[in-house]
Image (cartoon, rainbow, N blue to C red):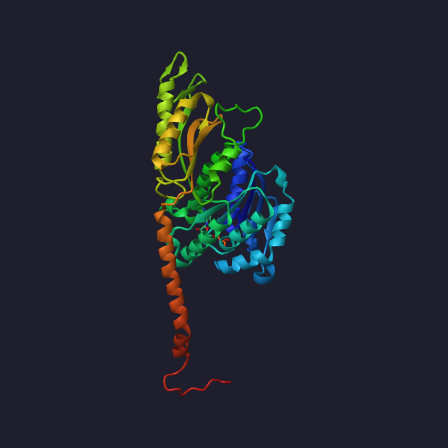
Length: 392
Ligand code: GDP
């Protein structure tokens, strides 16, 4: 499907920038337009692929291009004040060619955390196409203020979008990585997962037409109904053999005279679906109770079969307890077969409950410190016996 992507704040901008790169590399054609919005000039300059004219600096009157310093209330205020400037950039997008908006932001910071929900609300008021959010949760080691920001942003963002797709940095943190190097890998994971999912409805000219194609309306229907979504993913390589044909670890290399072994392909697909659903999700949660799901199997057409997808879909119905599980294929000439699973309307998410708990503790702590602050300062500045006199 064709998306208008708006990256709000540093993380949002970097992720949308990376989506453009992914689009270019894979020829997937999902990003119809890309805009970056920020209150920090340096972050906008650092982007590589988003066109200059689509980079919008907001809040200049208030923060002079220096960002909001993780103050997400200020982030929300300046987004509201300068919404017309953001709208000007969006006006240049051919929205009649776009299936949905997606507003991307890190929820732990200031500009995106506060601004993304404001923009989503604005877009929903003006346009009839869906407005989705892609919100990134901070790592648990980032500290109280980031957790508090994320908890408040999450609550607001969910309310303002048609569906909030969540990615949890904490689940993808790697030990011993530099923060920047870590984000590079994490952002690649984000674009791969969401790229396959949104790319599924975008079969271009000359590409194979899928046996049972996933089209954009199926993605939209899976996301409709609102709430919070998470994405599972698993892949297996299929390799080129020396004679130039595809020899596959995926099929165990046991090809009969009639090509790939159908039963083996079916079994491999179902186990790939299980791996995707039970492995690492973008937001860890219990999949039982998921309201709707979409399974996208992608890879060379000879490695996809209807029976495998059907079995995978049935298994997902049983595991989630949902009767609304859609599925289809996304033929791509890549040397791998992958399963991407969108679980929409998840409700059993202990990670969010923990985040909220830590956020409340952080908020209480900040309130206590603020309450004591005047008294403590006075105690420091005044001498015990009041013998000193201020100058004036
Ligand atoms: P803002 O510019 O004020 O909106 O704040 P940032 O986007 O810099 O940071 C918000 C949060 O996003 C941080 O607390 C991190 O958890 C996360 N973050 C920052 N940069 C990246 C990135 O490149 N990728 C990912 N996945 N997360 C990021």
